[in-house]
Image (tube, rainbow, N blue to C red; front, top):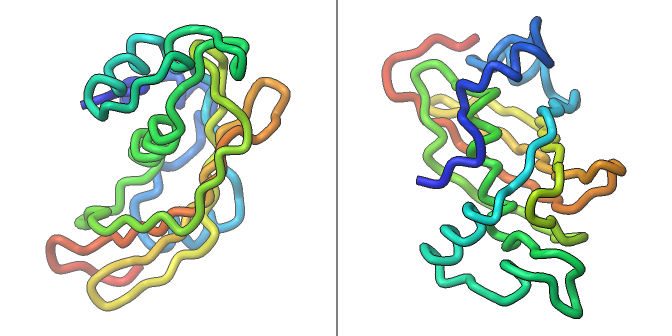
Amino acid sequence: MLMFCQPSDSRLEKHFPTMQLLTNFTHLQNQTGAPIVLPAESIHLSTVSLFGELTGDRNDHNTEATQKFVRPAVQGFLSLSLFADFHKRICRIENADPINVRIIETRFLRPVYVDEPITPKLTIKSAEQKSDHIVVIWKYELLNTASKKLVFAEIELRYYFTTNHTHQ
């Protein structure tokens, strides 16, 4: 499994000492519209190479500078797939798993360069409680050090309850 960074990373506590892990529908509702900005990190060449090996998505511009890219660039779908890791750090709904994922929209606006600091920003656009699951639409952005958007996506997650639950 590719890991961008360890989910138990204590840097979250340093940056968000009072941030409560999102664990129920009430938390999701209360957080709706308020961006969660995680600490800046970088994607290393070893991760880009491993992703290329696993997916077959290997191009010269992923490992070296080319005419099109001034530095090695991260695969677009690698930068998109990091949403799962970032999401896992801030949201664990009690007695539910995010089983159904639907990418509503994706835009790769600028290249994400290898070893370039990027800042993930996640915002709950909407949250809706159903009888056996919760539907949440997340806005996912990766920003560079100049706060310019590199990647934008809207992702729908359906958290299906695994045991009896109470509405919160």
